[in-house]
Length: 252
Ligand SMILES: [Zn+2]
Image 1 (cartoon, rainbow, N blue to C red):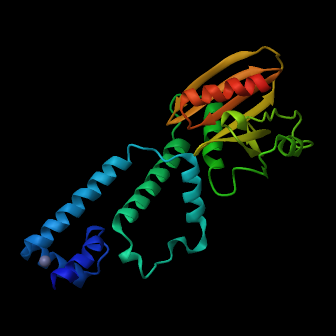
Image 2 (cartoon, protein in one colour):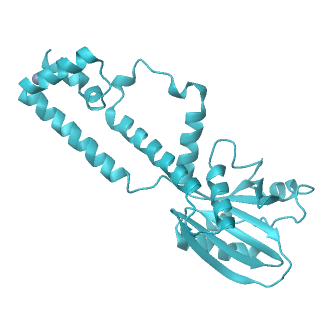
Image 3 (cartoon, rainbow, N blue to C red):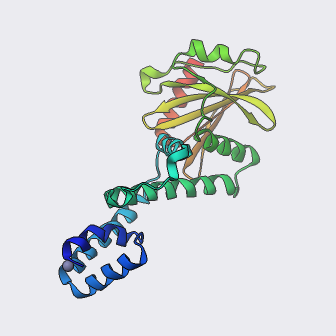
């Protein structure tokens, strides 16, 4: 094996994707060629750094949703003949992001810890909404399209304030099930993040200030206003979430 042939196969070797004869040939060459061995060490170290650096940053919801949509396509797992030549950092990054997303789903959906049943249901609903085709039943950035869609579908029509002017564009709405009853959900965006707002009527008309809790990287805020209990679930920063809720309440 020449040095050029060895370099050509290094990425695949690092990713453990080589068939046996080529794998042995590369290993043999690396043991005998300090220059290629040095090249391999750099690749391995960079790959390690990339992994270390990436796992500290959870993927934003919109990215998760896009990855899931891409994975749901029928050809997502078909082998591509050019796969080996795909630049390895990109492959490594894509694999890591998918791993992070998968662990996020498992973590979020399987663990209950101390959060109450309702919080658990809302968090599961939020995570489910990020899967392909689950986010919206009605897609519109206009409140006058979203609000009427709920007529006849739920007993009490949800508030759908228009908040684009402060950086929270309306994405749409959907009907979800929480505690075995249909609940309207209004969806807003904040840069690459999504905010799901759930609401249902309650017997009291008291207003309460938002109470924010954090569970597995997701923030949940609960407040009451005008005979409704409302919950917002998102992975936006807490200050952004508070700003959103303050604007929502003013417009409500
Ligand atoms: Zn060499």
